[in-house]
Length: 354
Image (cartoon, helix red, strand yellow):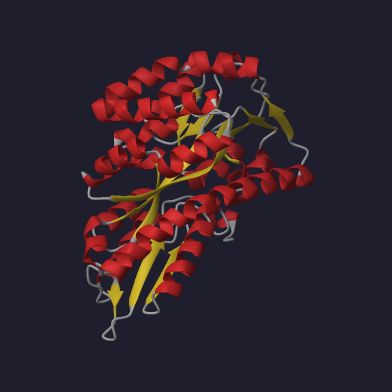
């Protein structure tokens, strides 16, 4: 894993780095189907939104292994968070065909594809993880409608990747919405997330991922939320007193490519890409569960931070506080977003009844 201390220094350097990387990529003689030599060898670049060792890294490593085994003329290069700029930079590189594959989290890509923000809604998914696994991997309405929305923005949706339940870390125990009153919590720059935490009574603060540790350390923010493995990898537990498990939302990212790049590949390569991402669905589900469980155990062994698990009665008070945000999502995402939301709600209801 790359040093978390390196990432804590901020992101001012990212724009220049991304520009330099983009110039390097565009000047290396690559065609629309990747960096290609005279011998027909290709380099497929895969950019992540996280540091080395996390869920996205495990996914990309397995993707690399499967693709390179199937095609000996392809090399997949993996770029951890920060090496090629911000999430926005990476997505733009996909659209410009200077990057072949990337992760794009719902909170980030939702700024241009509002339908994707369905994954930021709190208390939407089932408490039964097997129900959620099926929705993420194969719900036809979710994949078809969201895929169409991505296509309209010059992106090809390959997979929806859950990375585990979000966990609140804070300087005090948060067991009711009233406990959130005035708490400065870091959020992604999403209107729905801002509305959600304002509904709890908190004071949400958009902030870059790499700035969270310093923000907590300096008191610019009092709390943040990530899956357990990210809290460990970024050492957020060092500067917080409580970890609160509310099972309010999954952290969801998506694997994207360029439609032009994918269509430019020979049919056998297109098939390999699609088959590989499909096969990775159950693999990454098990990986994220293991990583998050191990992260919780490691945090407990390394610190005296207090773990708080909310009861079903406590959860219900939070759920009631954010019900209006569902209407806000539909207003923002339109008929297609409403269709996606209903498909998830129906699948959750059906799965919970079984």
